[in-house]
Length: 440
Image (cartoon, rainbow, N blue to C red; front, side, top):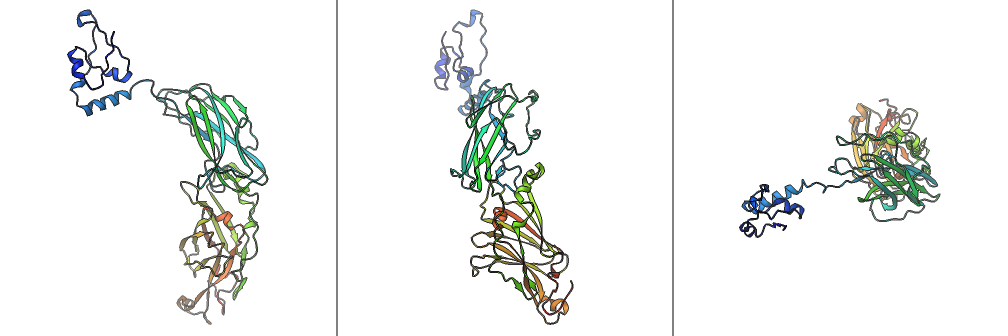
């Protein structure tokens, strides 16, 4: 026996010797051709005359045939977590966050990635481990004080009972998922699970521990699955949140406590009940929500609704920026206004936005130049209010409320915030003009 090898060069010599080049030789590197003559009773399989193909067509034929070689596809593993795919602990869906001094756990699952294996199916052990951490914003390595992560088999501080999984897609013909979970064997900081049969899923526990002095922030932990297929990894967002909002702090020094129409009401954000992050954890439905809304009173009949949502659509944004939309929800009436204030420097430039009835205005904030927001209503400066305050030419703005400074950026930072008036601000406190009372 001798072995024919066709490399696209020297085909003429092969043909002269009575040997036809065979495509299968190129693909396997070990296909044999009989050296017996044609009349021996062996029937030779007809093979394409590749020497007659132009070189580009020959290359394409080889590539297409290679795609059908059995045994070349390999399975891939998929790691998923029940919590930790979202980076915002308040308005992310099912975030993973700890208060200082506690342990929280969630499920990490490993399965064969659907529609990837091309027929190959994986069974065997998978060692799961976790590494901490990277900064969620810069992705630079960081070692947060008082924060540690691990993979184990035992739940401590379960976030919630795991819901039935609905995100698993099985290719046609694959067996149904079993109801019995494969076993889990824990080692120091890691766990080994076993995928016992093709198409099944194994699970372990991802655990986050924070010390009493853990530093607030958002970080990225990496879960790794090591198997005979190699190493598969999954990034998980882990946040440390202060156990309570910062105190309200003193009344902003750059805002007058009273105006010609009355006092300016502080809106104490630290007094929100329940605490926003405690509310987030209260139920599985809250934990899955991507918005957070509250109502804040300025007077007994008027105030604001405040809605928080995510600002970054593809990843975290700095907690030093925020985007605000302010809506004057009354159908008919005079304008209201919102103003930025830097209570550290009263001489710093401010932004003032006057918003007509039914109108919405949007703007951006930065913690370097803003510490809080002040709200104002229109009042008539004319001695006698005639003709809608003389066709509104004599209208002025007077402050009526201000957000407390302490918790402002904890709540607003890195989020989109929608503010909308509630009730008739024209009646705050009672007079609607300096000289006369006007009812809108």
